Image (tube, rainbow over all chains, first blue to last red; front, side):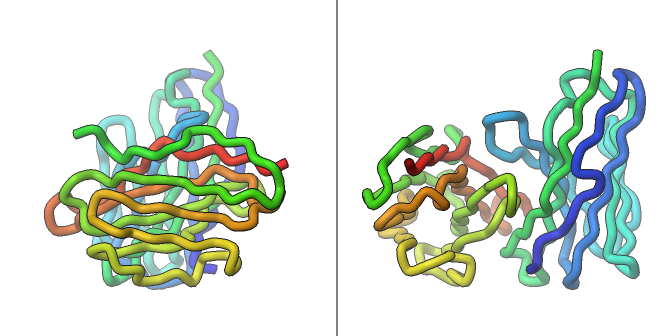
Length: 111
Length: 115
């Protein structure tokens, strides 16, 4: 399978704490993206990191990428109850047109 | 823009019946994807189209599944006959790397239950 795998499968933290999710993948990539899915909704794009980048920031999000280990991490700082959702990494093929999603991490932020 | 539009949002059908899921991609997007999401298997890519042409259907589970894209603004995913194990959320997504950057946009999904 070309799907990635997220770790942990589920994460529960208190509001204000940081949340870290990891993603491992198998194939070479053009870029890696993180998406969020609220319960009962479609996935929404959060952030993209290219294969030649090592770290990227967007607001409270920080993404790292280690292509030698074929892994990525998503850090959400100062979490809020509204961050409760499932988070997915997506690896994008070298053609840039195939998106393969991981199994997701379910994050619960307790107020 | 209205985003990717899928219908129906929810469908309950009996085993053996034909199911047709519909998708309208974002205008100007030249790629369209069908995904299936289950607890056990996560989000699986079933098939994707470029300029209305199927490019990769290797994720389509069985011959009972078929997908078409007769024009740039409409696609269908059909299951005939349906089985209980087809119960899942089916997502349509669209993408235009050149015009809108390298992300894809999902619809809200079609929740299918086969009893």
